[in-house]
Image 1 (cartoon, rainbow, N blue to C red):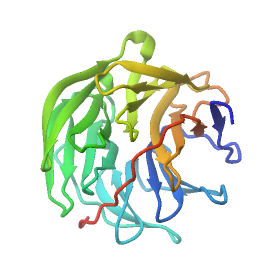
Image 2 (image 1 turned 90 degrees about the vertical axis):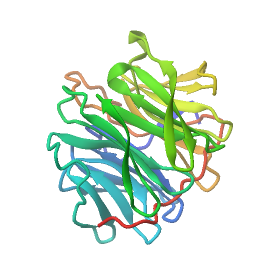
Image 3 (image 1 turned 180 degrees about the vertical axis):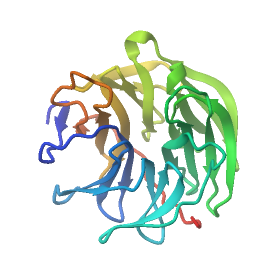
Length: 289
């Protein structure tokens, strides 16, 4: 295969593709279309793609140990059952901020969920980074975000990477027994780079970052230097996941929102030949409601 290929799905394109997740239990790659709103599933063995309408904006999904998924909706967190579709009641995270929504989230190696919130209108720095422990306790980790993106975790478990896309900045946090301390700026994007969006870390400890308005993904060494970039034919690249039983297939989401002259590949799903492997994903096992 060339450096990239488009996953065909009957001409379907995402308004705001995000929330990239590999679920080995289902043999499937899941991702969301936040603003449609919708949830998508690609079964790797057959290539079958299913798309479900969601009741409200959905920023991320993770797998649940008991089956199905857990999703970060605008109004809170809920269980999502599939085949047939069933969305449970939402557990509020920021009931005092009705203008906020979930944007991006993942589980770490312990099964804890790390997720960010943001102002729907992207006008106020009212977003926060939260951690939901493996047993369900919710705690705010960092505040004052315009557009939170990430998170991603080093293979050693010592570092968390998280971005404020609105500030073109990726931060690094030191992790210790579920606690996170901001260690400083890991990397900043210039105007020509666009904005740092979703990210993931490979088994070598290098951070892969999607470039919103940059039309590419980049790989950063643990010291923050850019090792390489792979150009893609969409302007707003949004998230990255390593998939397959060997975690050697990279899928990349994109968006078409806000583009008056959206091209054929804006909002497409890509598979990228990156030459490295990713880390396993761990399901969340805690309560939701």
